[in-house]
Length: 267
Length: 253
Ligand SMILES: [Zn+2]
Image 1 (cartoon, rainbow over the protein chains, first blue to last red):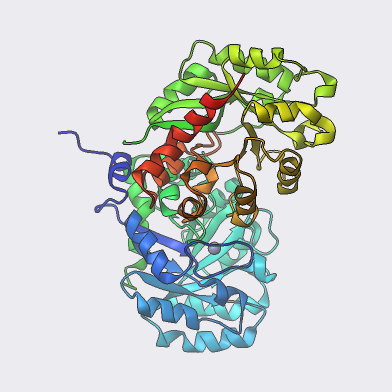
Image 2: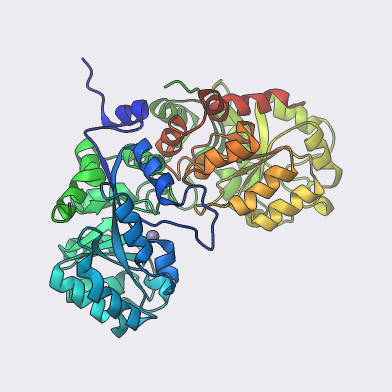
């Protein structure tokens, strides 16, 4: 009998039990520049169910953009769906006092946090800025995951800046959100040079050929899947992984195995 | 698959700036479409966009000739220069003969204004003949340009393609509400989580046309999204191909 490949299985069922998906780059809640049809936790869980997404790791938009709201919304959401959600503690370098407070409180939430989230382009301080140092040192001591927004040619979080923090904090697992979008060769060089640096695929997968380049140059074990949910649809990006010229072993690594390895101590 | 896909938005040929593994000609495109599970397509040679509409339109016509699963679109220019658009019925007769069922415009790349001052009664005629005009938001058409075109030609059959990777409901919904013949192509509608479902709830499934965005995007993305969209099977069928089939049939040459 014909054993269906992953593409046939996803086409037929929408979700595949032996290929659970881990989404390591997500958000939640309303946002200034866009109208989201499904931005709150119950709708997001629903979306996850439809695509077989086992776990989603996020940082709420409101945390990232308002110190007056802060990380409480992350804690609340994870504790409402403890089997399906984990959070990154949001770090905004404009408010060092808030960072100090959040890092002090971090250990009270082992059921919530897997690491930190930095959004340097939007917060307008480079990842190497002094204001980020307490957060990086905290992550380094605890060997946390740090999801950083990265973008090609950025002075805040472009590949040259990422190189400096990757060098400085070798015990921290750095997930390059958007994989230095547009400067793909430099993202490849970072993953080759630093064992603690990973590609993350949100906003990468809407262009053919980039994932093929990553897998061709570095293999598929240092790539994690992410969607920026509630921005981008799981099936859309899963479809891209299915459409890329890579094999089903690579697809299993990208959609779940790499994440399972990184998250094993938190789950 | 229980959907019959008719792709409204793809091109063949190699663009000026390299993209990953495009289809070099129409035969190659058909082989790729078979792999994706797409039955037929409204296609154009990218030379229409990247070289010149004069050269590119002829390449499109030549390539699709004899391939009954491919239909073409030509790219227009201002009527005054008579490079592409000629007044009178002959232009439309030529379209029919060469199996061209839609038009494209790239005003930003081709340096003109897509307005009544330029196109006058000619686009009124295109509206009356119900010929779809496809505009790519990623390639040379800004939102103000689309809005002003529709202010000038409110009955135009207008398909907005490649709507950008950010969700753009705040731009597209007013157009869907105001203009009955505006359609959205789905290669990036499908990217917005829940975007398709919200549009179908609000404006019905008739306003969406499946598109893959090939070769810039993976066709599997928009296909997998539509296969499992949270809408009825009947709605999915219309979006996959039924709506475009209807638009093609109602063109009056
Ligand atoms: Zn993000």
